[in-house]
Length: 347
Ligand code: NAI
Ligand code: MG
Image (cartoon, rainbow, N blue to C red):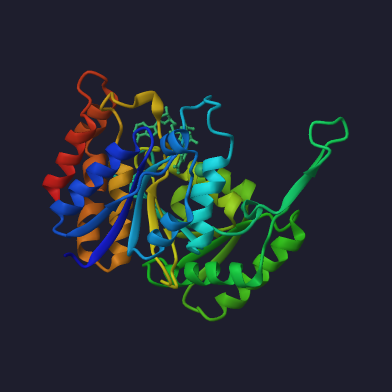
């Protein structure tokens, strides 16, 4: 028996294939896992009508960590009601397991548009407009009304901001940028800004900055090297991290950790990309994002040295001109398993 019990949710589309490569690399890094597979996602829903049965949620809550590939039906499929999997599975796991920090590291290697980028986005993961506050009146009628409120609690904002300061204080640049829209979202913005200032007073070594989210989009594209750690709310974080992923080497590299930093339960690790049904079975799914997500998992489990080896192998391999050329050339493109093998060999 290994020390770690890890739940695997391969999910749909390319999810199971990229999770398999992540496990291959963890094994090569010398970390033994006891894995338990969970059949969840669009396929399960279409077969049984179930999304996340309560007993499954209870079992997941007892694990040390969860590794997820991706869930979702092919784009345009109407078989799964919109939002059913997002709300019923992904968001429910975040809320029920209290995964209140979504951490997304961005690092780029030599061959990319901005070489040597190294920053992280800390996104609040349980509140904001994703909390599901709101409702509708007169649905489908001419006078239809829909509201979707943003929930911001001092408790929720403070624990997220504190995590971000803690993270920034452990990095060499020790710089933290709050991103919000305090000039328009004055109620929520005020709470975020005051909380940020109050927690910041406890971290005199961390230099701070503030940017409106629209300006941050410009800076992320024009001069992303200005950032060290960014902290922001749920919706802004969702959008900013897709943009950051595009700037730092594409969706194939972007990894994420849904963390319960209080460690009252497991944390969940997943690539940022989705089920990519358009390339299922072609062997063209890039497993690097899933492999990096597994490295974040190792780090959280305390296997910091193995985690660092895996991350380094991914970043260095992806930055090699030969790797970039192979990934872009449809004739010589490496398969999902070949990329997994290449990383496994390096760790
Ligand atoms: P997607 O990320 O699955 O695909 C977008 C584009 O990127 C596609 O052209 C795809 O081929 C490509 N792509 C994605 N991952 C790739 C990889 N590892 N290697 C190579 N190419 C890759 O997003 P899309 O198409 O919007 O969603 C497809 C399904 O996935 C939907 O059902 C959606 O709801 C779900 N989804 C699930 C997520 C999750 O489980 N966290 C996140 C995003 C989408
Ligand atoms: Mg997103």
